[in-house]
Image 1 (cartoon, rainbow, N blue to C red):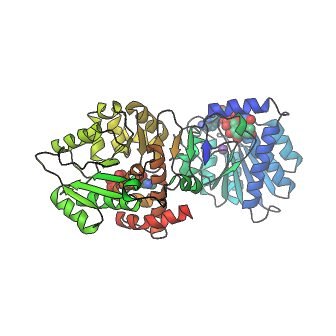
Image 2: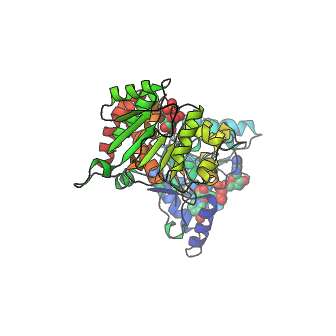
Image 3: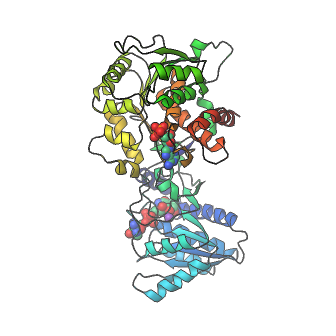
Length: 496
Ligand SMILES: NC(=O)C1=CN([C@@H]2O[C@H](COP(=O)(O)OP(=O)(O)OC[C@H]3O[C@@H](n4cnc5c(N)ncnc54)[C@H](O)[C@@H]3O)[C@@H](O)[C@H]2O)[C@@H](O)CC1
Ligand SMILES: Nc1ncnc2c1ncn2[C@@H]1O[C@H](COP(=O)(O)OP(=O)(O)O)[C@@H](O)[C@H]1O
Ligand SMILES: [K+]
């Protein structure tokens, strides 16, 4: 598991640790780890050209000390000083090691040109403009340096986080560095997990500076394959189809038959004991045709509540289901039962007008909106705000509805009241194709039916779903049906 803490908690933990250590010890640890990663990235340290982008805070200090270490090993190191101040100890160390420094002022065109030439000729650029002390997008002259670094051919290594991204949220509110590698210290930062910040971080390397004993509960966590393997249910010798869990699926309609077929497919690949599909006549026939192992029943339009399957362990409701009055009755009936329920797509749209159906519910509920659907659940919030600050808005919805929320999109985030957010690391834009959300709903539903709590079911579901998309065609485009077929390979990859 990777853990991430907010700026406030990192500062408190660093304060407590620094009080027990000699002056400058933490920065020395951080800079040593940074220099090690940089040395690994360079084909050879000796004779390489390294440019440091240095701001006025300790982030710049880290870059200067790491630059000094590289200079001692024979790199030609040039520091571009962007701030009004500079970390004096770091600058002295760089100079003592044979590195050079020059000031970059926004108003001085000649200095800017000279800096640009250094950046263009670099093999490696170390971004020490701002770290956790940053606020908003980069200001000048930092922004121009970030821009030039992006245009250069060199590998860009960000110190702690790419300058200009918001450490706590991942928001990018203006110019920011785009890194190939980010070397982060002590703990990850939430902004390194969630888009759009995460997209600018590249590969994230962690340097242990001994902070762990001082850190409280994380703000966010990002599961790795072993965490998922530990959570996934596995059938035992005594398993039978009822003990493995019976999932009821109310998805699709005669108009949207694909949502029925894909959602049931996702469920069947999730290792469910039995899927009981219920829906309109043509959709039901289509499900049976594609998935003969599903137990199918046809909805009675005059008695939608009475025709729902009984003796099931969990429900998935909503994908392609419609917004008509019978769908409302169905939703109310399902939520009235004391069973775990996953609500997706149309069920979320219906819920937005009837929030009490979930907020007053005691049994486990999982909502799986995309950003547009989450905006419906949080009146007054725009879709763009949600996409800019996914962690915050998923957490807000979880608190408002008193349930688990999986927010889909560029980064999938799972929030539950009082628990650290889970950020899925396997997502891929290959998933941005119609019907993949239906597969996800079915797959997670299977895990709910097997008895996993919603947060764990959602965590495993998002992880396996993203991995399946990557594995389906080795990175080439996929359809939602391909995704269903690739789930076993993803499960094999996780379970080993
Ligand atoms: N506190 C500690 O114990 C440790 C801190 N470390 C480093 O220290 C960093 C934090 O250092 P600081 O607190 O000095 O803060 P930073 O170095 O992150 O940034 C502060 C400076 O950046 C300027 N700034 C903020 N936003 C800006 C923007 N948008 N555009 C241009 N300039 C901007 C501020 O005016 C301020 O001068 C960490 O990210 C990490 O790299 C590491 O050395 C490990 C130990
Ligand atoms: N840019 C993206 N990067 C990663 N995953 C994405 C992206 N866009 C969409 N997805 C994923 O694709 C799936 C789409 O689901 P959804 O929006 O419900 O579509 P549909 O209703 O067509 O199935 C979700 O799992 C979502 O997280
Ligand atoms: K940085």
